[in-house]
Each structure stands twice: as structure tokens, then as C-alpha cells.
Length: 197
Image (cartoon, rainbow, N blue to C red):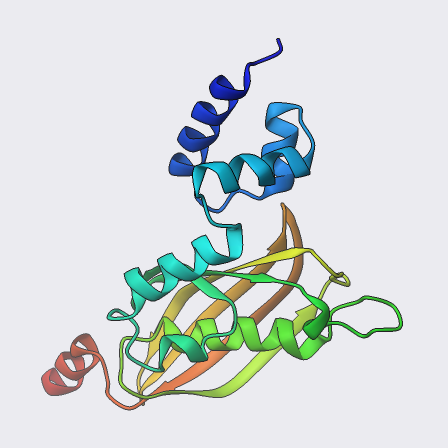
């Protein structure tokens, strides 16, 4: 069914409000129009591009939450975080991230996204990577969007927290890693356990 421009734009606003991190490509597919039409609609409606929407949320919502490093030092944009539990970030692969010869993302950018997210999820003023085990599962290419998901899986004594990070392009796993994070203070639970010994 062909929608009028005003109907499409109304639905576009609703869709972006519900899913603020949807891409122009996904919107074009949803509304059966070109990406250029979506961009023009956004301009008319004063809706910023995806990167600016992500940046806005990251800067305004999580700036006061992250303790272990300044938010601008996180590689990628944090879109969700619950300290000592889980976090999600998005990294758009641009020309700055790739080998110019083959348009494939340099591995250290994927590692940096995952590692900085593992640092950010720690509820402490200081968090450092003590050890990591990582695996690159498939190449990531120019213009792909990498969604990294961090989960705290274990809190050990001696101030160590184990964080698992899995990175996806759409629904496909492209990278995973287990990060053993040193933090400067032990959790209350650990202190209580030691006090009772």
C-alpha cells in the first residue's frame, strides 16, 4: 500500500522514537522507499542522522554513570549500561577504521570497542585489563555497524571481575572476548566474605 508523504513521515517519527538506533537503510526497507527519501524526510523533520542520535544519547544519558573512564574514551557509543552487570555499545565502521586496500576493519578497533566496554561496565574509579582471551570470527567491512554486548560473568577475590563481550553485525557474531578486569576496590560482598572468615 502506497503511503502519502505525510503518512510516511508520521510513521517515520513514531518508528525512530520507538527504535532510535534504526539505520536509514532499515527505514528505507520498512517504508519501501529509497535511502535518499528517508534522508530527505529526516531533514524536513529535523531528525538527526543515526550517528548524532547515538552520540546524543551516549553523552547525555551515560556521562554520569560510567566511573572508570571518561565517556569520550569509550570506543563506540554506549547505548545501554548497568554497572557491574551489562553494557552495549555501537561502532560504525568508517574509512578511519579500515585497511584502504580491501575495506576491511582493522582488528584493533574491534578489540578496542570490546575492551573499553569491559572497562566502562566496571563500577569503580579504576579498572584495568589484567588478561584477555579474544577471537575474531569474521571480517568486518566498511559501513557495517558493530554492536558489542558486555556481561559481567564473575566477580573474583583480589579485585578481579570477568567480563564477556560479544560483538555482532546485525545478528551475526563477529568477535568475542573474555576480559579479566582489575578494579581498585573489592565489592562489598567480597569484603563481607573475607570479614566473616
